[in-house]
Image 1 (cartoon, one colour):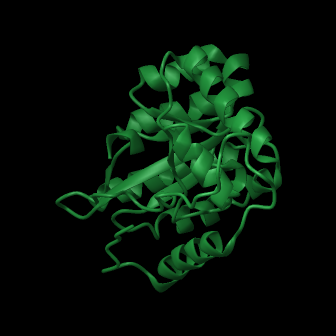
Image 2 (tube, rainbow, N blue to C red):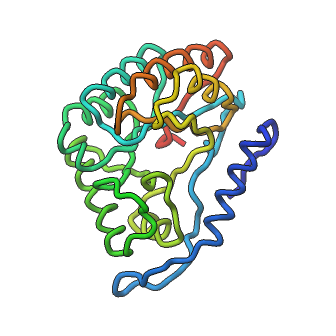
Image 3 (cartoon, rainbow, N blue to C red):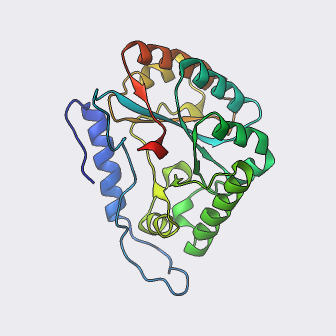
Length: 242
């Protein structure tokens, strides 16, 4: 996957290289479902916006683990205030539990991606049949809740393997990772989240969360960071538009 390295910080480059190399070394531990053979995936996850735009300032902000009845609407309000389109990776069972919020995401012009049906931990260590079930059920649930079939998939916790990538690809989904991670799922102070998000450079994919816990710090931090990034001339895109 061709990437443009010019202008990227060393820690971003190293993080990307390290994650890609880990994926290449990782081998499946289980047999594939009946009728499937083991082949390496044709593409690696998307770590950056493929085309960072003529200005070179195009960014993508993504949100995982929603929809959440408390935090997702607040995130949507922040995005609307800054006129930013984002990508939400939804958990299937939560999309079914809160279909109106899931539908509000797409009605606001944001993209939705598949983040599995139940967000099981150690996703890549699951039997391939279970991984495929999680992907397919998540896909069906999100399509039912939003009326839109996702084109993108992000493994829970970014827990990729050759098998996970191949099954996502076989399901017609593009695997998406990230390049900027403020680790907001740990609920750090908003100022720390802001500092990390402000390190973003053209082409970066930012990871945040609108579900899975108290996201008050994320809401405040995203509001501040988007305002500053906008003032710097940053532009934003949803990943279905790339």
